[in-house]
Image 1 (cartoon, rainbow, N blue to C red):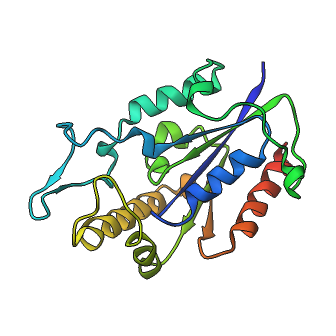
Image 2 (cartoon, rainbow, N blue to C red; image 1 turned 45 degrees about the vertical axis):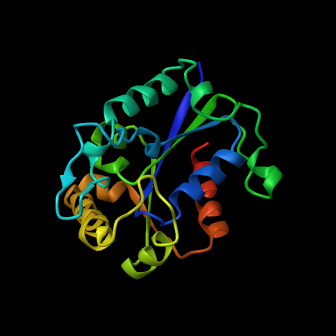
Length: 209
């Protein structure tokens, strides 16, 4: 039975984590991708925390997400249940070498990429990750990127300053307090070129494989 190498990619919103995760999934043979954004509760779910002054839910906390379902899906993948085929792309992908990257082709090892802004704040999933990456950006750059994106539901005025960035800083402090977790995470400047970030992760995977 194939073993799984689990890669966690976290970080601030708009930091490039999803771009990195999708590129890894594209170039790595035998890889799967699970995105935390797929597990938000519906807008009318009573489990959301509502912010009266903004008349908007707080979408930037763990309780806005069905983390139990996400964890179950992750475990189905790593335990060999075929639900992975419904979550992600087919097995047939080019190897990393076909994109002028390191060749990574240990057929006894499959790779699961978990992408999400709060994955390291959920211990059951964080503990599964063999490699952990966290992309950071400044508040100003985060805002510049965020304000040009469209979300469903869309951000309301004041949501970034009152919710998104404070929740990110809170989340980051929680990681820093967990000395073991903090020591295991590779922090990457999100302004670094996409190619360099991808190559760094591929190099780390190659060493393990």
